[in-house]
Image 1 (cartoon, rainbow, N blue to C red):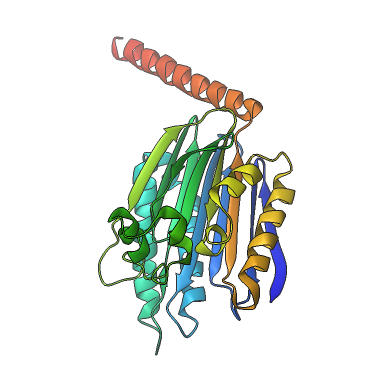
Image 2: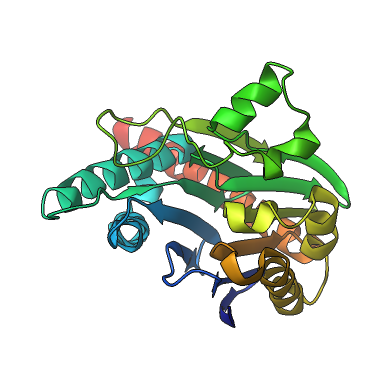
Length: 282
């Protein structure tokens, strides 16, 4: 069992992954930040497909995210539209990668979060999750696209049984399949004290919502991240899954900064518009 944890940090963000009991690492992630606007894009992918296709798939999702970010597409499109573009482009990239493989088919989950001004948008396909917390209260949790989740909706399983269900890993949606993916979206206004957790199934199957809420609100984000991944790996044991997690926390300072950025942007737009009206009027 490999307990080594790779850690990446940004302002108010801590992200990391570990291989756990698997021979390869099929979880990948990206944390992208524009310092001028405070915009952040966080992406987590869990690959699958056999014969090395899983690593290729999650890497492909992250590569597309970086490319779209570098192109500045997030500046041009509304948040939900940008995340939809990301999911569809990543799907096409996995289809292209699959054509070059002799065996195995690259498929992946995705969960992505875009924080822009005082709004946050998220999107997901598969069973990688996003949680939104206010203090210790869970305000939102994405719903897995799995057979087990379908059984919960039908009343055949309780929510507490979902993580250990035998058909939890049977996904109904994913990137890289024969059809374009159906993407689920969510959005909210940012509030002080909110926290977010994006994670692969290797994490949420081992840590409860209550445990994740407590870890997500800790001031020492890096310490909380390492503690969460260490716990998930240890509970998974010798045959445990890969684990990946991104933690984000909104402080009062960050919230006020985002509000002032939005105010300045709005005022600049109004002033520019007035100047244009004056110029047009001669």
